[in-house]
Image 1 (cartoon, rainbow, N blue to C red):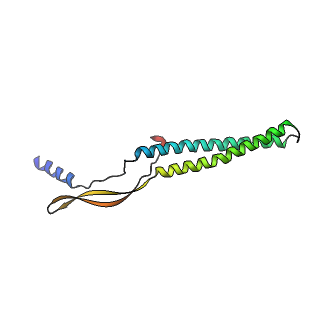
Image 2: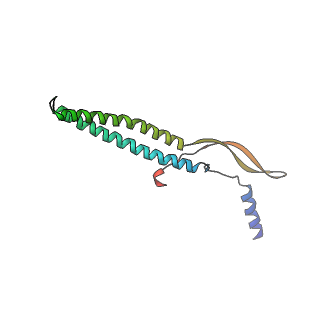
Image 3: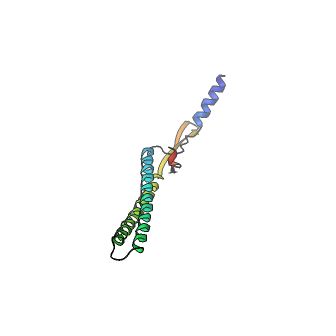
Length: 139
């Protein structure tokens, strides 16, 4: 039994340290994902509402006389809806930038324990870590 425990302890000491992802910036990544989702929903809502307002304004202006109040209201709705669509585009672009920040690419140093003739020694090597958070809605 003692030989088994010693063998298992030896194996666990010689296995390299494996790190799947760097967890140092996890809070920052989650905050960027949350902001990205909110901006994406806001941008899409503004674009849909603006498109609908533009369409209603066009129908009002098209089906009324030049000097009526409906034509003025239609023109105002068209301008307001177009402005909403135009404002929604940078919000969606900003959302994509936040999502891109969340997928961080970092350069770090990882270590592995190597068996040397004089004992165990840590071996440090450069590593490229890519963290891509998937399914942010499930967190």
